Amino acid sequence: MTAVTRSSFGWLDSDPERRRQMLEVLDSFADKTTVDDLGIGTIRDALADTMFPGTSVLHTRLRYVLMVAWGLQQAGEQPSVDQMWSELRQQEWRTLTSLQKGGEEQGVIGSRAQKSLRRMPSSIYSSALQSWGIRKPSTIGAYFQLCHLRARHQDPWAGEFGGHHAPGSGLDPNLPAAPPGLLRETSFALRQEEAEYLRERIRRSHPHSLFAWLADHEPVDLTGSNAPWETTVELPEQMQELVEVSRGVSFAILGASLAYNLALAEKREDAERVHHYEAALNAWFSDGEHDAPLPSFSPRELLGVLSESMVRRVESSRGFLAEWTEHVRRAGSAESLYRDSGQLISRRERQMKGKRARLHNSAALDQWSGASGTGRLTYRWPVVRQHLEDLYAAGVDA
Image (cartoon, rainbow, N blue to C red; front, side):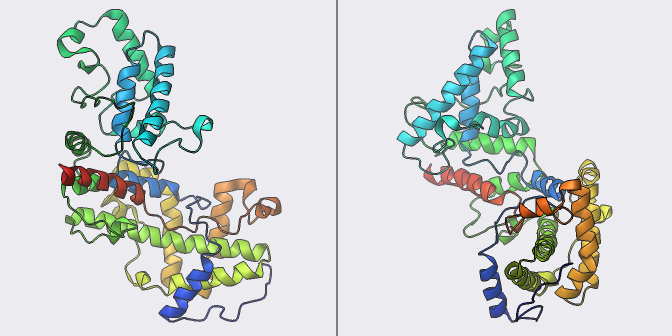
């Protein structure tokens, strides 16, 4: 690697206060994102989907799940598929205005983008509706096609079961009715019957998930928690094991990301960033969390918390992380870890990005912002925490 001038603190061990100061300095560069330059997205998503199925980092508030379902229900009554899509869009714009009139300022999708909005709530929450068994067809388009076919064939069940609530209509027949005035003025506050319905859907669809357990065990104090492992709740043994593996994966990946950014800084001969990433990797290596057992990333270990199909899906990222943690276990210092794992990091980036790998392409390196994927993986916890708080609030307000 290109030689650069080393900082005065270099790779020296540091006391807790010194480490804190180093990380505060690093914050000036950190992007807080989890950009997937090293290809760990599959294992991240497998763990997130296992703990919190149906959720997405794009979610804001839980009541959107019902608002989208009510919009689909209304749109499905139109005579053609094209008109259904048009009606759904109108419903979504009216929902935006209704939420703003109701005093909602945070979490309203499209409040800033307005007509330039590209991803509508129906798209963002589509996976939740399917995952939780609220909408049976796999896509909105398939749902509209089903509505169109049912109307043309005058389904004999429709009269008995009430139109679009009929079995086979594509929406759960137990979906609560939309409240009066929904599109005039509304809020994200869940009515008790809505909260109970969502609990039931999550519980029935994913009975063994951490999401279902937390939804059913209120009140859980989530105050100040930034990740699933930061809550004080006592979980069943298997769920606790899943959370602990997720914590270990998150911690291991952070170290690899810091080493990668340090390599980029050296390659670009950016002395200031080299100093800060050396400090950050040193702080990571000496962090107390490092004393907790890191995952081995063996298939046997992962099969304890993930399904067999998911373990097969994460094979590429599992193999890389197994090599990385082996380097961590053998290393006597952050400096030796960085030196010995250099080829692994470089090879992994090349494997994932090909000719666009920054460590091998000066033009791609020029596009580096100075921080890539330096945020800690939290597996959608901020979104899930808000969803749970919305559920808990409905119980309190009842």
